[in-house]
Length: 182
Image (cartoon, rainbow, N blue to C red):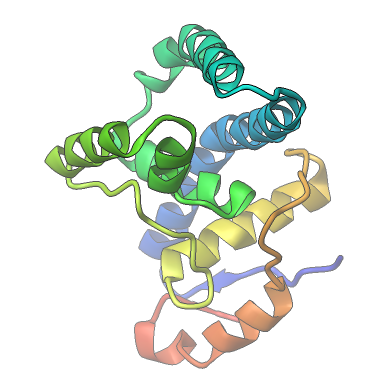
């Protein structure tokens, strides 16, 4: 897929884009890991018949993921955390809140959402490149990284048509003064 380069109207917007690209490339592997684990979890849970067995397996996987990822995730910045929440939605088609509610319980989901709210974040944030400019830039960064081989693409639950989304954003190019399309 050939994508024309974005041309930014000023250097500040270009630097913001580069910072966003760095952050996206840093957290994308965690979102990809989450999506892969979710597929494995769903396969295993479909094989387990009893509720007790499902709960036991879910807790076992949770402990493994916590041991593996918690030290790394604690090092993420606030902005990287917000991007990760969006990328998890992009990869799974479910918000982080919905994932916690489905695989843990409603009470845990509420606790995690309340904690996120203390940091002015929301686990209910969806990835919307059609209507959110930052999400469009994230999609642009990911598509370019997939094309160059910097990142490995994973099949998505929700399909995004980059060119259709880019056409929508062309209408806003002059109004926002962010970038221009070729």
